[in-house]
Image (cartoon, rainbow, N blue to C red):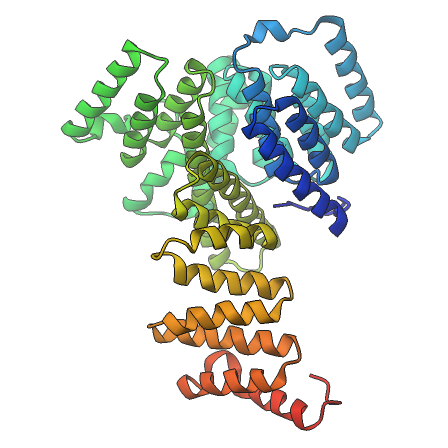
Length: 473
């Protein structure tokens, strides 16, 4: 999905359609290991829709797959990369931010372990009004360079500006650990901890699990692992021994991270996965586990922002932050389920979840294909019929929308589901000027609940339009 911000030219419908088609061709190319072709296609997608994180994430994964057997020292690049960086700095100084992002992706596609390019790209993305793109670029660089001081510092500052204080604290903590003499980092950790506590309110012992997002302040709390149940501690120790015995096996890292998450040791889980990614050359299972964990961090931030919004709904910056986090979560969930569905194509539950995210992202044609596949599973059929109705309605195909809504209605047993489907049918009929059908479905709904979604008023309007077609609704 695209995260369009003020000042960014929104891609036209044709550009979006082209980018979607190219991304699908790139996905097929990756599956056949035609990686150079896939990388070229995905670079074009990023140029057509610069705010779309899904394209950038797919591009990174294709590049990592291409160079997974290479060592970082192989990509120093010599004079060629020096010249590319110089042109990138010139473009940034001239405020040609689109060119910086486009050229930066080209550089990282050739020299994926470069550290200067992501820093320049993040500056351009922030200045152009795309802070989430800057955060994403830096986060990808951090995976390959977990001890790079500049990456952690710039990411901390960018996250702080976006109001994501808990994540900013984690990076300021890392800056303080890498450079103990840095007085700014220590001060920021204390200041942001106070701000985030004020925002989230005085939560009780149950919600203290949120500290997993913020991270423990150095020396202030005893590690959660010391408070874990003995059985959990034994399991953690056993998995750590497995990892020590063979660090190249991905599953012990995944299992250990899961146990740590269940014990509310979120930062420890992240550290385990980051180590696993380095030790296993970015194994696919660990990338998926890291994506899932990152989504949970964003969900926790969203809950905190929503709590703050309830306390003071008038704050525009909180509303904007809620919208940004919702978009970010959707983009990450879409990428996650797409990867899962590619890995396990016969799992129809994954197909259904992917279809839901595609529909939420308004990629209705792709969503339709996924729901048609998932509907082959009898346990998912009824829910798929509802979403297929939504998709065809969004695609302005009233006959097929009606067909799938009616099939779902025929199997609906809950009254609320019946009311929802009848309202969808009535609305869709009215949208296509099929007034008799709108009245028919609306009347059936009114018999169940005459107050549902103000159906009585809508019925009166639709009936009036049948008697006098010149009446404007």
